[in-house]
Length: 148
Image: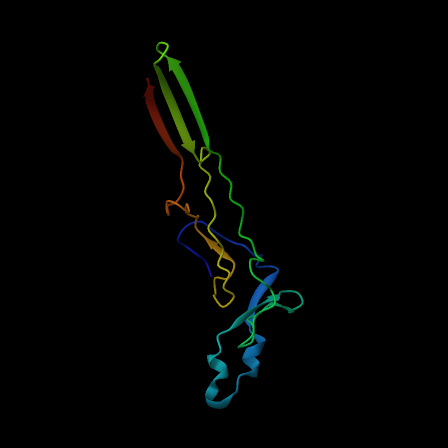
């Protein structure tokens, strides 16, 4: 499936992993064709076909644990500079410039980690700032302050 809404990539190599029907769908009864209604998928090795990730059985917890997969790293270069100019003994002017994301690098979004989704492992677009909820871009902020 190709994502056309912007930059995208796959967190997992499509040459190494593939989605297959979850093995527990085979245990669903064939009465009234319920087996065809099972939409669970699992992740398998492309070369061997061995199941690597699958949904836990109903009423049980999986054995993978929480927070095992980490998203792609995020890095940003922020900088600031300031200059204090003394007017006399008690007064001074402070000029300051703050810059965030100086190199203007995009941060990748979190990959889709739902193994039952056709977009499993797909990273679509860039991430957003946790505080501002907007895409990050280079920003400058200036400040002049008179101390007396």
